[in-house]
Length: 151
Image (cartoon, rainbow, N blue to C red; front, side, top):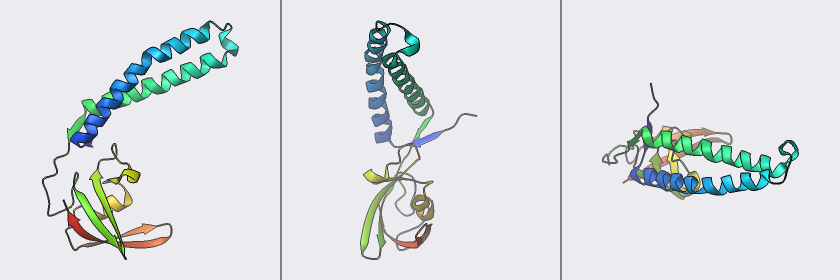
């Protein structure tokens, strides 16, 4: 059974852009490999090894993105009463406020405010309503959040 990837419409578009960019780099890598071959003995050719490694990384990422896009399910964020995938939530911890968008693991980027529903915070608040509290166990102890809004 194939794995299904829950992503937002925007996340899918970002993956498609990345895929196009990576495919565009294929010719650059091929040129680097051809140039490195001209340096001679491939067994002791660092430029060749680096170019081949770069090619491998790009091809792996291309395959990964193609698999995600092929098996993607677009998140519909219609539920505003309970936290679900695609919702933007505002949390409060003491005096600090945080705004996160709940996404699947493929799109998670905490520095950009996108947290996975499988992350400690995401799983603790998933399914909760405005006014509910969630406690997360961290390495520094328990942290409590209050849900202020769901968009």
